[in-house]
Structures are given as structure tokens and as C-alpha cells.
Length: 196
Image (cartoon, rainbow, N blue to C red; front, side, top):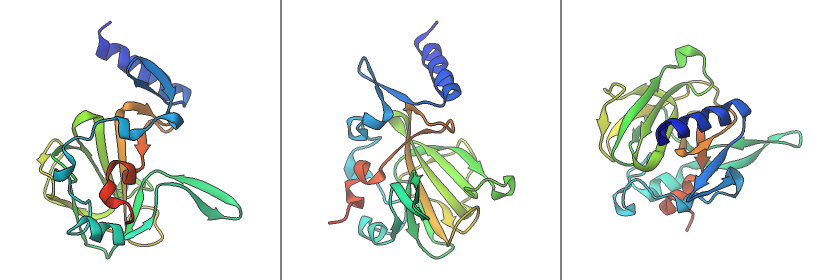
């Protein structure tokens, strides 16, 4: 069995079990104890672009819901695997770095994420953009440069307003119970998003 076949078999087993673990060096550890800052970013920090807005300060000012647990009322909380940015429908959304579009799905499939696009970056990182009104003129497999407009914000799927829901995930780190690559706090990976 090759190394790639072994990793694929492990991922399939983890998805089937509904668990997620990550391999760091030669140690296995639970995803909850994993530090996303130990995984390399896809490009040097100076060449990253905000997913929305002209500058990182613009993007920071639009954050309406942060990564992590959030109160959904009646004493309950729900895990929020990304950041929501409040913005008008039709706001241009940008690739954060050089990458390849690996998924473009329409809200017509009934998914709560609505119109969505996933861009694969180096080192296993993926940026996920949800609730779009429409896509830019690309097809799955297209290469995009950092800063390129890849779509426009919308209000498709399950939303309470027209946000961009943006996630930063890593396919090399493991998978969550839904079979998606593990999500990491974008503010940890992109320090420019943190409040000053």
C-alpha cells in the first residue's frame, strides 16, 4: 500500500467513525488540541488578500459573527466553523491566494450553504465561500490568482441576512463528522483579521 493509499484509507475510516484526528510529525493528536498555526500557510503572509473588501481593515470591520461556539438562544449553542461578513448582496468576493477552484455548487441542490465555491490552496488549505448570489465567470478546475473576484455575496441557502460565510479548512489535517476537512479559526491563520 502506498503512502497516499494509506492516508486515504485512514481518512475514510475517520469519516465513517465520525471522528477527526490529525497527524503532526509522527504523532496522532485530537483535532481539538491541534494548533492551526503549526501548519504552513499556502503563501507568504504579505501576499494574502482579504476575502471581502479592498483591505484587511475593510474585511475586519464587516465581521458580524466569529468562528467558534455561538449562542443560538434558549441556552443552546452551535459551533460556527467560519466567519460571517455583513455586506450588501452583490459585494465582490476575492480569492485569498493563488489556488484552483475545486467546487462550485448551486443553491438549487437545497443545501443550507446556498451557492458556494471552494478554492484549493497549497499545503492542503481550502477557502470556502457560502451564500453567494452568483459566481464569477469560472469553471471547476480553473486557476485563480490571489485578489481575483471569484463571486458575489448573496442571501442563498439558510441565512438571516446577506452575509459572506467564509471558512478556512485543511484537508491534510483530518475531517469532521460531516466528512468536511477540519475548520480552523481564520483569525489565527490571517492575523490581519484580528481586532487591533
